[in-house]
Image 1 (tube, rainbow, N blue to C red):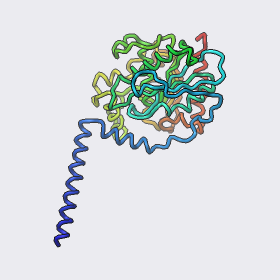
Image 2 (cartoon, rainbow, N blue to C red; image 1 turned 180 degrees about the vertical axis):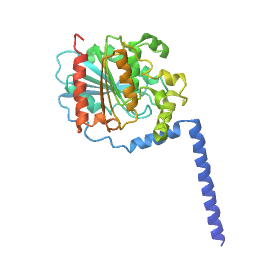
Image 3 (cartoon, rainbow, N blue to C red; image 1 turned 90 degrees about the vertical axis):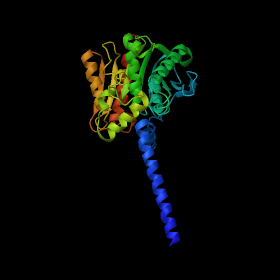
Image 4 (cartoon, one colour; image 1 turned 135 degrees about the vertical axis):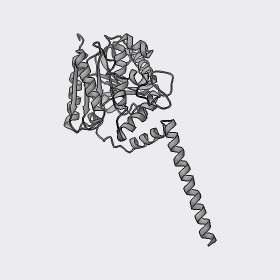
Length: 329
């Protein structure tokens, strides 16, 4: 009987400890985005992104972990054709990961394929939320662009033919930087001096990105929780009316001077409604843009080159780059 009572008391203490811990996590989640960030990054770790993403590119060489700044996250990779006769256009890519994860290796296979087509592909790391907040990645992208521009001869880059690209959260970062290059007033609002002149930025290639954070902050269900959590981690607020949330909207700040843009997305991805909204806005402004939206496909479908849609986006990307980086464009 004593043993039974002892076991019962032990079980009660364990149950109370679990309840207290659970309550602590609930309270913590109300005060900080970190619990949600841990859960999301764990879910990311379970995601199978596919094995075939352009690793078969031939005639390409790379330099990895090149420092573009002084911080531990401020490194980039450069992918170039082995045989080149002069400076080439550069595609500077910002990786995805909901602003809280990911790294520069994710788009590397894609950039190797673009290098095979005659471009220099640059992929950069940047500091992640919630340890680092907006607009830190924007500033770091500017530092990377400054590095590319100042080391153009060494990298084999034509600094007057640069295209910004990105996927998922990286598409938002790239798209926002393109907006501040195009609009001095917007650059002053954010407090960033653009690293490029408008004439040097020839275009933007944007895949599956969140281009209008206020649009998604009130979404319901797991999708709404996800958006609010990562936006809180990155922007430092979960209030849709906060100036930082509105400031991060490319839909709200694009102008007629925005560079030519290729947009892709799948309707199985909840972010695609923001991509469509940006395409609509660019059309209203008279900006050259190429929307590539497909039914049913999910987030980041463009990286899977085993599918017809992935191949179509790759082909359209090469055609887009050829057009916007032509020397007389």
